[in-house]
Image 1 (cartoon, rainbow, N blue to C red):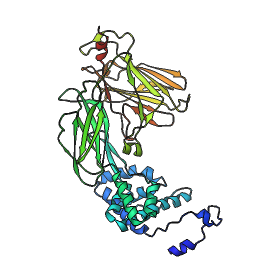
Image 2 (image 1 turned 45 degrees about the vertical axis):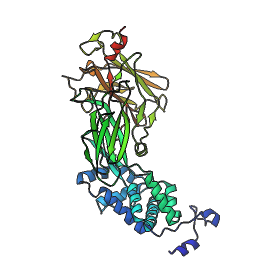
Image 3 (image 1 turned 120 degrees about the vertical axis):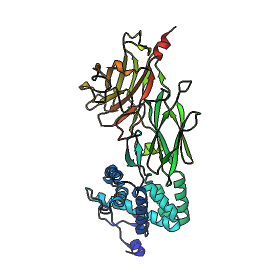
Image 4 (image 1 turned 135 degrees about the horizontal axis):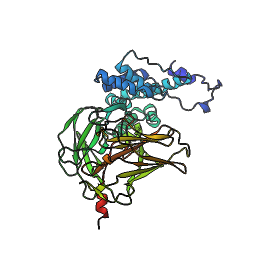
Length: 456
């Protein structure tokens, strides 16, 4: 069909009735779909073409969810075909009308990119790359996962590429690119490890470059000089560790991460939190990172979960050289869910001890007996953990008596808490987690400070 034939054609609505001129709305003729698909394919190959077979297999697994979503199917299929040309291009949804929607979404963006390429090919390829980005995001210096990190398919931006004159489309595309982040930085773990040199808490940070060039990454804590730079490949994140040091006022330490010319400052809780009456606040909790919240670095706070950490009843003396309460520590948590009194499926998990090698991990459910997870416990056997479950208005509560091994020889208690609600949504404290992250980063509590606070 030619453009002239399309303009004269009788269009029908979903009910089969012919649409009159007032019902049609503006019609846009997309005559650059084929070159647009070619540009998008080039961008997809540039993103995943250098990945190893193992990395490509992990990417393919990460693309399963967007491939099953009509709005994102075209992007996932492009990347899969870039890694394996025999991947079927057509969508296969039920009902079949969703296949039309998926195809239209892809063709609209292909037509927009093809039209933009006629006016400015380099800019079109940069936009195309942003539309199909996938990335490796570390959860420690030895582990991580793959996820989509592409930009939103903003219909307003799409309309500006399709409907505006060529010059205005290029201007809109450049404005879009200028607003995209060149790198992202986040805190994986505030104080989950012990620095072998200083003996203080060691932090783990994540940094990823979204540019197209290789560069170097480094991190500096506070006013100290940055550590040795490490190579940073595009879309392959790095975990950067270091002893964050302590803020004299007890607040966070600012870590400055650099990816080439890009510099990002993030506050890090490497300063141990001084335990003091009436107790250490546990919260707020944050839902797992999503594509948008992670890209915008805007954690999503979860309401209804809170708690406190206090010395166990009768803890008045001092034990050993650590200066911690002799009777140990008790964690109290309240969970008021969106489903009210329906607590079926709710679960808490308390992580105690260093990251990746916890002293103990405790599963707590309102409907089951508490259990100690099978972890790499550094004692002869997993300690018994007394837990008391109660019901409160709109939810439930748990009182967990932590084992004596919770506090290390330096007087620090490293702790984190996960919550799984009845709908299967996970949240965590002190930091949000990536969907594939096996355990949350820790906050360090200076348990010895409690007795210092009580001294006259």
